[in-house]
Amino acid sequence: MGGIIALIIVIIVLIIVLGSAIRIIQQQRVAVVERLGKFHRTLPPGPHLLVPFVDRVRYSMDMREVVVPFPPQGVITEDNLMVNIDSVIYFQVIDPVRAAYEAQDYVRAIEQLTMTTLRNIIGGLDLEQTLTSREEINGKLRVVLDEATGKWGIKVNRVELRAIDPPPTIRDAMEKGARAERDKRAQILLAEGQRQSQILSAGGEKESAILRAQGEREAAVLRAQADRQSQMLRAEGEAQAITTVFNAIHAGEPDQALLSYQYMQMLPQIARGDANKVWVVPSEIGKALEGLGGAVAQAASGIPTSNDGHFSAPKKIDVQAELAEQKKAEDEDADKRVQEAIAAAQDLENTRMSRLSPSNGPAALGAGLGAPAPDSGADEQPQHQAPSSAPTPPSAPPEPPQQG
Image 1 (cartoon, rainbow, N blue to C red):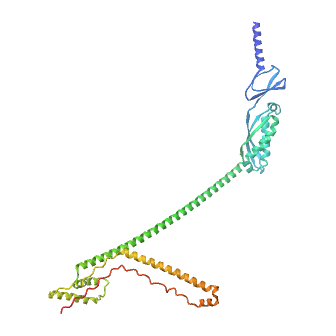
Image 2 (image 1 turned 180 degrees about the horizontal axis):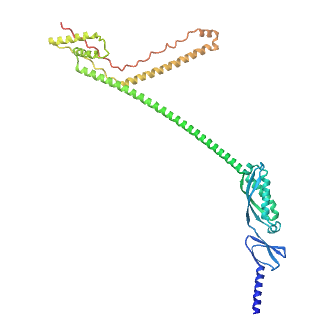
Image 3 (image 1 turned 180 degrees about the vertical axis):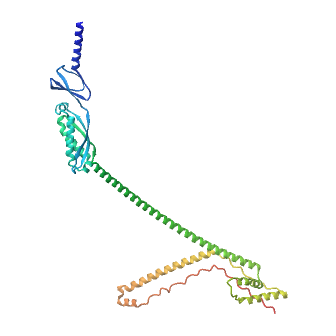
């Protein structure tokens, strides 16, 4: 029974001894070993054997980069304004022995050093510079911390200011200023938009006015051409109607008696009208009555009436040819007048130069001044008269011989 208890005690002692003698270090960590209270060595990651009751692992350092946020701290700027700054620091242990023995609590030491350095930097800047110079502040703070923590075996990789909060009154004033700036920009953009709109509208109205004027001009040209064609066609129709009437009269071979009878029938229509107050008897009515009486007497005596006084048919008139000939004559007359004006101007210039020429001497100059001016209108030619397009009226038929 006693042997079993002794064996159990031996096993327990061996387990304790082996447990204290074997130490396993995790990856990215370094252990600091002390032997009898004095630094002995560092243990890299992996298994290691220690002397039981002599060696002891005092510190286990994490060699990875550490992120430590610091609570907001009140800092006074150069213009005596209190701002709260929230910062965060990225550092890494590069010498575990110095980090273990040079600083009692290196994290707290870094925090205090950061706050002190931050107050020194912010104290030389006003509020506007503090809000707009974060990169500059971060750079200065990192340089100071890196230099101070180098003796602790720590390297500060990065310093960031997460937030800079000015006082509430300053925040309200800044918000009002930002709102006023935004309103100003909005008004500027609105005015610019209205100006661009007015410019585009003016350009559109200008183009519209130009197109409207061009359309009116083309419409006026087309209306003028249509009126001209209408007048030409109307004149041609009237000419054809006159030709047809005269052809019909020529085919019927009217005599003096028929014409006198028709003249007598037209007299009541001439006198008809509300505005006619006085009716003057035409002088031709006597001749018409004489012709009508002579025709009746010849018919009563059985003498045949002479048909020698019939009308001759007028010639057909080509209105287009007449207008073309008239336009050609006008163009030739205009060209002739231009040439005459140019020749007269050249003659006048030559005369003036000959008078002013110094080679002619005083006598020639006096003679030139006393000479009469040439008659500029002596060479003018009479204008060409375009042939008339009106048809020739028929000649009056001869009176029939009186019966004795």
